[in-house]
Amino acid sequence: MRKRVKEIVYRAKYDYFNDHINGHNQNPKLLWKSLRELSGLQSDTQTPCLNDENGNLISDPVITANLFNTHFSNIHQSVPVDKTIPYTQCDSFITTIENKLSNIERFTIPLVSVEFVERQLKSLDTSKSTGIDNLNAKYLQMSASVIAPSLTYIFNCSFNSNKFPKSFKLAKVIPIYKKGDKHDKNNYRPISILPIISLILERHVCKHLKDYLENNKLFYHRQSGFRENHSCQTALIKLLDDWISAIDKNEIVGTLFLDLSKAFDLVNHDILLHKLSIYGLHNNVIDWFKSYLNSRIQKTFISGEQSTPMEVVAGVPQGSVLGPILFLIYINDLPSVLSHSVADVFADDTTLSTQNKSLDVVVDSLTNDLLHVDQWCQLNQMSINSNKSRVMFISSSHNTREITKSDPVIPYHNSEVNSCSSAKLLGITVNNRLSWGDHIENVIKKCNSYLYILSRIKLFLSNDNRKRFYNAYILPHFDFCCVIWGNCTRTLEDKLVKLQKRAARVILDCDFTTPSSLMFADLKWMTFPERVIFQKAIQMFKTLHGHAPDYLRTSFTFTSEIHTRLLRSSAPFQLYTPKPNLEIYRNTFIFSGSSIWNALPSYIQHSTSVQHFKSQYLRWINQS
Image 1 (cartoon, rainbow, N blue to C red):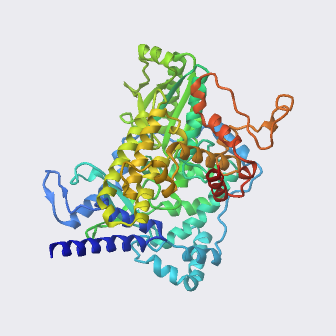
Image 2 (cartoon, rainbow, N blue to C red):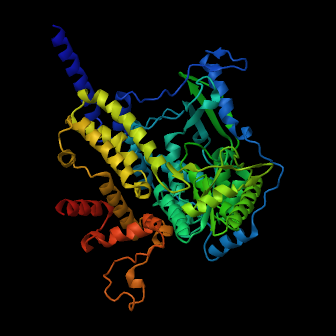
Image 3 (cartoon, rainbow, N blue to C red):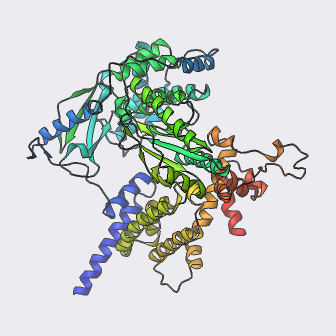
């Protein structure tokens, strides 16, 4: 009887897990949610109570909601900024923008069409959370053809009157726990949910505004956040290649990792509106954005109860479509104040880099430019978080000894910027030797934790669903920016391949006598080094076919662009591969990417799309 009961329980769990996952096969978001729930990774989104000022627990959800709402509404006041300093814009920057717009008409918001609105309604994500208006995405999608004309009329009235609908400015806020004491409101971040209809209106404006800014090349060219064809990977490729190129020339690299305190929440609306006018937006559009930003209200919800409404007077609207692009506009002129450094920016993550053969020159350059950034922050009511900002000096092993002996300092106010030998940058761990042991140890640690979970629940999953778990939780850690850190030592590569083998055995229920080549063939996996080459090849295709930032495309030179006397036998669509001075230069994307690209057959190089390239590449590799 006991054996029979165990069999019934096992079969029930097996059917439940697999039915739950298979039911969401066509919806990646719901599939991800199902895997989180089944693996016990679902996080607690709310707390029943907070501590009051005396440290006593508050059990009333209404009081808790009001405490959270007050806290979230006043985040901008928690960062000390001097608001008495009048805002002034750099004259040279204004001149640069005016020159770019000298023959361009001022930006206006075109009227929206019924077809656009209906298309947006029909493509709504039905799993999207509902705002305070309780208009569910599923019902909006079902009634798209009926309500699209009325919504179009409302949207166009908004543009014609330069007024953003008041009901669209009411946000529903849910506190999400981060880490630390669950009874401390500072350990929560707000998730703002706006009316779904308002996001359709914003999407129309955002598309046309972004096209205007991109087409006129008004964004800072090394800003990689919230821009099409830009990513953490492209930003890191450019930054690391610049650093390694400097080391290859025997230069010392000094880099400042700046942390801007709560930058999105500190955006001053008056300053933002002034900047919008500098970028050539028509006065009517400025009035519309003024209405969009002003009088925004939010309510915080806890356990079904809601707080009293409070106005949000600073920051870009969280949860909005326009918020990210407005922030990019606000911070866009920061790099223009630099005299010696180059800024690499990803949204609010700002890295200043400079290089020279003299350590003293590097230190002076960073010190002066940090002062310039600090002045910019004061004028723009932003603040550098000195506790989280870091400075790191990167060089060859020979110069590293000189740096250690000199112990250089970057002063900041009455203190100094904390020095570090490694730092987290856009999701990867970099160190002053540009070796990848620290990052790979982090990757292995994360993957092992997920592999342990998979080993615990695999009995209740089919092989296909075990693969889905692997693809959802483990493979992304291997792939994320591996084109950069995949240039690691053979020892580190072997550690990653060993982890892949463990994962394959868990998924396929194989013992240690089964050759890894058979398991990888069964799963259709590449080894980690093979996958790095694949990912580099994909990025090369994107770079050379217009699916990557200009700062990557201009890094490469076709052999046909070099004097024919130097390269008489060069084949079409082949790249010039620079010659390294030091071995480390072979780790640049410029060098390794060119080598990989040149090894590809011509028909793969000329694929018609990214997806076509991937399929052609995989077919070619499997036939090799």
